[in-house]
Image 1: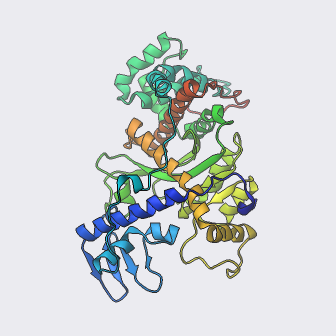
Image 2: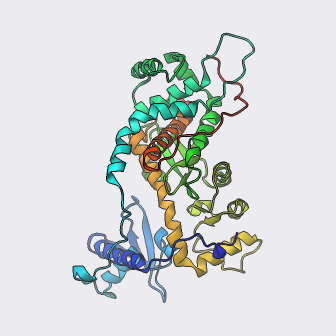
Image 3: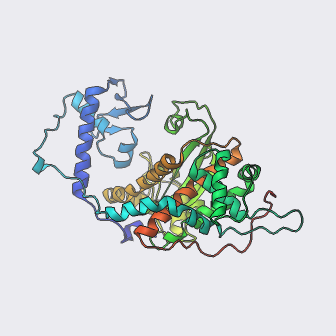
Length: 433
């Protein structure tokens, strides 16, 4: 699918671009006033304000350049270049304009606050019912011998509900008994059974399938998606950004959640949990394929970590436009060796329609919002101790997020919480209860 021929894109908004350019000048002025800027033989060194211990190199050649991600993506003056220009007196500080002449921000969409408040107020009350409907799609594995096992759907219900409640397992047993009294589970799992199932590695693919299944009700709404990964720690003293950029060695063990999400409702359409040292790039195709089971994919946005010829081909194979920015040292169109047609088409669109690319690529910010929602609601710190239990706990956090999104959509979008038919074949080799 040729990106240049796609009609499904937002028009360029010049006013919004002018406003962002002015905002970068103002941030550059703030940096010039508060940050020490050094100089060496290569150029000017500007300390990063967001990444501890990091700095960017600014060169004032015929075309000023900077090594920061913002300049590599936009290829226009960033706040660091503006800061150097202000320090050297090559640019005058921006003069504040009268309010009537200022560029205004893009108007926010009109929201029905009454409907929003009602949906938020009833999310917790509807969570148990929607989660039960989701767990009804979990098939019971066959059993030939041994004492009867617990219903697998009941165990998954209890494990996910524990993450939603956010208390210790022993305190949570009262919630399990309450769920049994209300008819949400048929048999109450014991404390030992809950721990044993959570630590069982064979539960992981079941939870991954439930993430995909939980997004099913929104299949007619979402067509544009974003892909990214973020970390969860077993220690409350760890910070993912500091660990990621090398300024913190890390106290606890880190795990990663690789997700694809819809940009309209922020529903997670596919997810994988891995150890923290797993690379992001290989998960692009699996996330895309899992999303494509229920959704029609028109666009998929991802950062430079996913820039790969096979990933661009994977997007075109499902009929989608891959919005992945190219690096500053990428060879121009027609000059690279052994590059497939998908790479050349995407690079041509990135170079010749850069402003339009940035406007559409902005959807990638929604995946950052999803991670923020998950961590703020259900915590960025894992309670489980073993790695297999931590992987399962990460997936339960994502399932909790999806159930909340579906609960809100049932009120605001008037959709039904229909998760499709149950799978025909049950998972094998599950731990017997």
